[in-house]
Every structure is written in C-alpha cells, then in structure tokens.
Image (cartoon, rainbow, N blue to C red; front, side, top):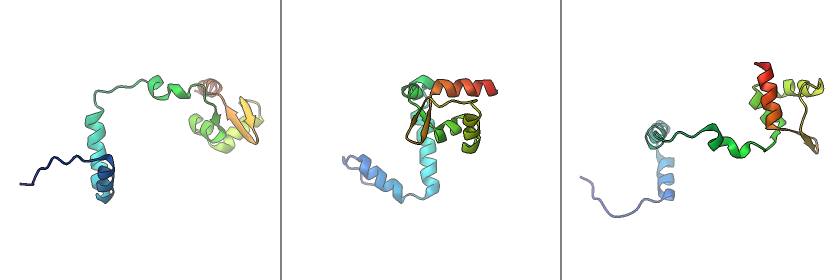
Length: 107
C-alpha cells in the first residue's frame, strides 16, 4: 500500500504529471473528467456564447459560422448577398445578426 501524506496536489503539479502521461491516458482522463465532473451541468447556448452576441466576426470566423469557404464568403460579399457591418483597415467584420439571418435564408 502506498504511503498517504497530507501534501496537496497543485494545478501546476497536476499539469506537470499530465504532460508525462501517455497520450491515450490523457484522452481517457479528460473523457472521465468531462463525463463525470460536468454531468449535471447543462449550460444554455446563451450562457456559453451570450457574451459574443454583439461582437463582430472576422471574415474567417463568418465563413466558419456559415460553414462555407472564405472564397465563397467573399463571392457573397462581392455580389451584395452579404454585407459587412463595418471594415477595419482591409478586414471586413460581420454582425452576428446579419450572419444568422443569412444562414437561415440558406436553409
């Protein structure tokens, strides 16, 4: 039997030990952790992403959100089907509301 001490494991200690674990064991650990530690927690979409509701998306983020390629997004902008909320330098920014409406119109 191992010798049990009153030494507290710190987050840094745990991180160091996890880096030493074989990859398969790390995956198993996180699977166990998420399956058990957060089982009773059921966050709504707004609780998780609500703070992003008014944050503009970059072109790359907008393309990812719309599940299209960046060149396809650019074509939609060029044709006027999708309008950036504003431009910062050469970067086009898109509002969540516009992206959501565009995505709904395509489904």
